[in-house]
Amino acid sequence: NAGVTQTPKFRVLKTGQSMTLLCAQDMNHEYMYWYRQDPGMGLRLIHYSVGEGTTAKGEVPDGYNVSRLKKQNFLLGLESAAPSQTSVYFCASGTSGGSFDTQYFGPGTRLTVL
Amino acid sequence: SQKIEQNSEALNIQEGKTATLTCNYTNYSPAYLQWYRQDPGRGPVFLLLIRENEKEKRKERLKVTFDTTLKQSLFHITASQPADSATYLCALDIIRNTGFQKLVFGTGTRLLVSP
Image (cartoon, rainbow over all chains, first blue to last red; front, side, top):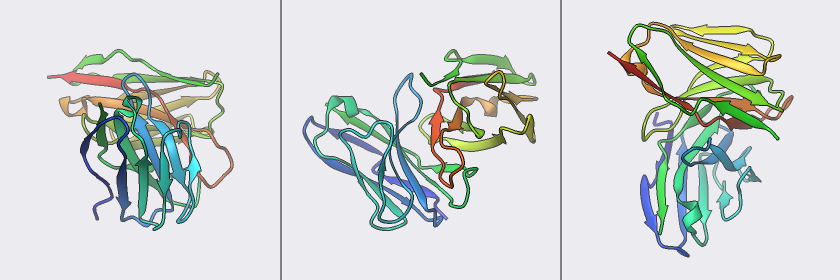
């Protein structure tokens, strides 16, 4: 049981390049989330999904797109990377059935945009 | 505006002492509050959840209190150990009465326990 995994762990992009971050969970969780974490700021929600085939915007969605074609995977895409998107990105998943559930986080992806 | 505040300065304590971390919030009415631990280079790990109708929750050496009047939660680690050194995040839910969890996180407080 690997929990939540993220690919890649590190990436350096040039401004304008695109990339996709992959998140996978093997806990059969309905809910999945993408956050970014920047120094001096809390984790901020980018996009989330309440089930396979659904996505919704979080607090800071601009410049990102997501897809949840399979229940276990949640992809985060950057179509045209900008230096402001330099950050550490965390994926998380949560169980269904109540608002008192916890979130399980992946190890993070450190992205640098030059 | 809505705000969650945790002490941005690191908390340095000696092994064996009790560490107390604070989470204050404004303009929220969370149904519950959570505490997470984050080690350098890793994702947050859930520690404890406390509901709005609970005053105190314990788990081994950890204790959390929740005062909805003061809009404050305190997180205590008793008999602290160097292995407790990490950043501790508080998180509030911002959607009540739904089956979906949407959390807002504080910036975290770094705890350093010296031998």
